[in-house]
Image (tube, rainbow, N blue to C red):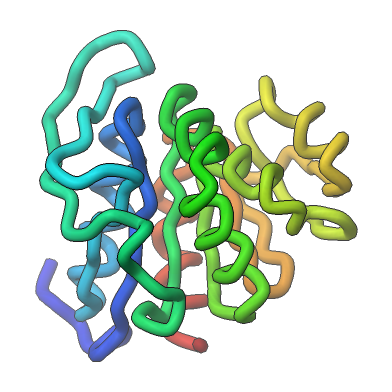
Length: 183
């Protein structure tokens, strides 16, 4: 598949920490790049992040472009929050990551989160009144954070785009490219 121009001149941040689910990083990144966008891996530390397969098998490592403490929402057009159980748990414990997510959602720019990724949205307090989906095991946490949680492949609520699991990646990637192109 060739590169399209749908996301030309768009800069997309992927916020992730050690423990991210590899396929939930790679497929959205590829979708953005094939649509002509530029992706920057942002993390809570400099260096590399360790990806995982199904939370238990080590995957590849990916070079961090910049630590979250050194980026601003204004530098990006959209944000992607991949899952993996460990990744969002680490992100929601980091004050810089929490503030970055809070500011990104408040900016109105699109934020796409898949599987356990929506867990990262609970800590900044941006979920009251929002409709979304996620991996089943975190749905109670999201409801407790004020969200209406549904069981659908992909949900778009304003600037939030969410999906349930890696099985939804095709529709998640198609939807995030469409939503990112509108912004």
